[in-house]
Image (cartoon, rainbow, N blue to C red; front, top):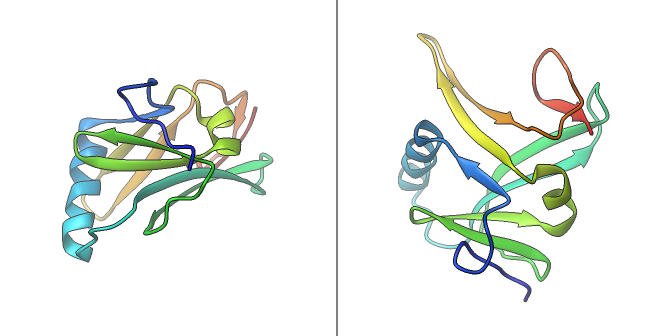
Amino acid sequence: MDTTNAATQAPVITLSETALKEVKRLINVQGLTEGGLRLGVKGGGCSGLSYTINFDEKIGPHDQVHDIDGVKVLVDAKSAIYLQGTQLDFQKDLLSGNFKFVNPNAEKTCGCGESFSA
């Protein structure tokens, strides 16, 4: 299993303080004890690539694993190319909250912020 962590390599992606707090809250609410937060990229969306975010109990053989303040962040090798230097943020307003990817590699993003091109 090809796993790296913050001790051997800088994380591909960072989490803002608000994102980290929300991820920890969700992990607690869902009672997750295995795996971690999976961040990735897949083809599709109005700009060509779209972000993926979910919890995954399995760590794949090509995943990079980064421990960010006690949260395991999983990124597959293909997605790592597009996410290098990205920060995951969480923004909340009166009615809802949502995660936002702040990606310095994105040349173009769509209006909703869920897809990009590099």
